[in-house]
Length: 204
Ligand SMILES: CC(C)(COP(=O)(O)OP(=O)(O)OC[C@H]1O[C@@H](n2cnc3c(N)ncnc32)[C@H](O)[C@@H]1OP(=O)(O)O)[C@@H](O)C(=O)NCCC(=O)NCCS
Image (cartoon, rainbow, N blue to C red):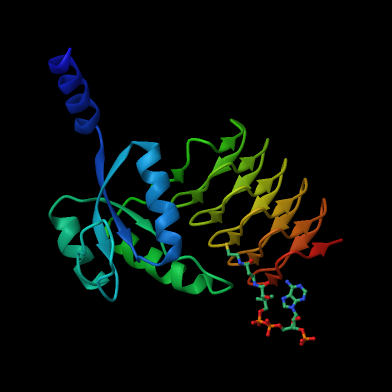
């Protein structure tokens, strides 16, 4: 029995690809936890400006990302969260793509994503989120814990939908926008590119 378990574990580990966390602030803890729960990638460590008290290996600053790519680590997850400054995530995204990195979608197993929804590369889909039918989520978006994106919403690249925010049906959110925690956007409304919606507000 013990031997059989060993073989199964090897099989699972054998299929996990390596991934690097880029940035190790607060948001990184959520992303890393979802990656572990997703069981598709093995976290080899993180890059950041400085070493943190972390359970993962410090791999140096972002300047070393090319070196790791050349060593065969081809997946990265951008773990920098943001409050209305999507430009940092955009800059890092461009740099990673220039090197050749793949940016997989990180989706917690508890999230519900409709089969008719589309989700772009590098997007993070946190715990207990719902992305409903025909929604279109761009690349490098953060759909944070317990947020709800209703049918046919469009969320453009690099935007952040914070925890427990609700987008009713057919809402359009422009690029690099920030929708604060627990905010509600009523159906059919638009949020402009780079707009910040304060936590708890209702856009009517
Ligand atoms: C909107 C926000 C960005 C403003 O932050 P700020 O620029 O530091 O502004 P301040 O806190 O100095 O507040 C400025 C004014 O806006 C008001 N205000 C701030 N946040 C507000 C909110 N959520 N709802 C209503 N009024 C708000 C303040 O009361 C203050 O009013 P005053 O000038 O009459 O005193 C911030 O309050 C916010 O909502 N951040 C989002 C937090 C969040 O969702 N985090 C989720 C992480 S997953």
